[in-house]
Image (cartoon, rainbow, N blue to C red; front, side, top):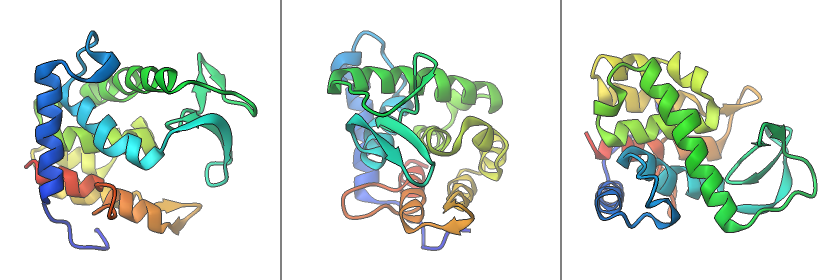
Amino acid sequence: MPINKITSSKRGKAAIVAAFIAAAGGTWGAYEASKPPVSVILAVDSLIKPWEGLVLKSHWDPFAKIWDICYGETRINGKPVTAGLTRTPQQCEQMLIDRVQRDYYAPLTRCIADFEKKPVSVQASAISGAYNFGVSGMCNSTAARYIRVGKYREACEAQTAWNKAGGQVVTGLVRRREMGDAQRIGEAELCVSGI
C-alpha cells in the first residue's frame, strides 16, 4: 500500500493531454518518423526523463553500483557503460525512445494481455516502473495482476510497493512511485489521473 494518499492531479491530466497532442501532431521531436505509442511518449516525457535526468558523461550510480549515462542507460550496443563514456543529447534521446519501445513497451504487450488497450496512464506508469525496476519485476507484480483484470486504481497503488533499494525505503523512490514532488509527476499520480 502507498505511504501517501494517491490522487488525480491537474498536472497528471495535462501530461496525458500533451502526450495525445504530441502523438496526433507528430511533434515529438526527432521521433516523428517512429511514431511511438501515446503511452511511450507519456512515460518518456513525464516519468522517465524527469526522474532519471540527463547525464552526458558516464557516472557511478551508488545505489545500483553500476556506471550509467544519458537517462539511466547501463548498456550501449550490448556492452556495459564504463567510466569516461560521453554522448550527445540527441544520441541519448534516440537511445531512450528506442530502448523504451523495444525493451519495455513490447515485452509488456506480451506479458499483459491487451496491454495496448489499457488506459494510457496505466500503460505509461507500468512502462516507467519496468524501466526502473525491470520487466520481469513488472510482469510478475501485483500491479500487473490488477492491470490484467481491469482493476486500474489497485494497479496504480500496488506499483508503489517498489520503493526500496538495498532493503530500505528510499524517499526518492516513494516520491517517484507515488505523488512526485514539486517538479515531477509521480507514477501513481499520473496513473490515477487517466482512469
